[in-house]
Amino acid sequence: MSNKTGKKKKTEPAPETEQETVQAAEPVTEETAAEPEASKAPEPKEAPKPEEAPTPESLLAAEKDKYLRLLAEYDNFRRRSQKEKEGIYTDVRGETLKRFLPVFDSLTRALTTTPEDDPARKGLEMIMTQFETALTQLGVSQIEAVGKPFDANLHNAVMHVEDESVGENTIVEEFERGFKIGDKVLRYSVVKVAN
Image 1: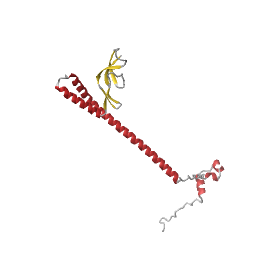
Image 2 (image 1 turned 135 degrees about the vertical axis):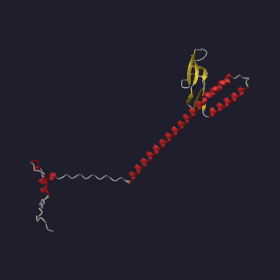
Image 3 (image 1 turned 30 degrees about the vertical axis):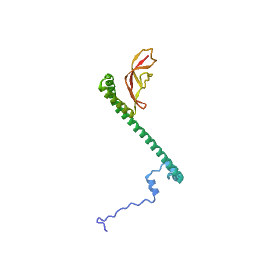
Image 4 (image 1 turned 180 degrees about the vertical axis):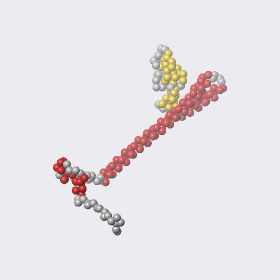
């Protein structure tokens, strides 16, 4: 192909070696001139030490340990969930039964104010017996109060009286009956304590 202008292209001569190119790019100073050529080369990295391959026995032991830990964790979770479930059931049952205690109080007051010869009294006694049976079947027990020593965990003292015929810290009168489910108190007995 001919060039229309008739001028030839100039080509630049290629550098003879790479070292000459590097030397041309970096100015030579006293420090670089004093360093030997070996120090300019990057230091070889140390080869990592090969780790010992795990044996099948160690792998099996590790997996067994992991399995046992997971099994124990699940067992703890199951027990904790069961305990929480039982606690919720007891709490709900207790709260529900507390709603029926005012009915018990009303029946008790009705029985104390109804004369013995009134025909309605027999019906009230039958209802009261049925109500007490239902409470017993649900696990509710009455808290004993009159004649017993005062216990702050079961009784609520609202009055105090001096009476030498009764022992110290003895309950002489009960104003409101107390109830409990197992060891949990649904309602404290409201009482009068002597001495």
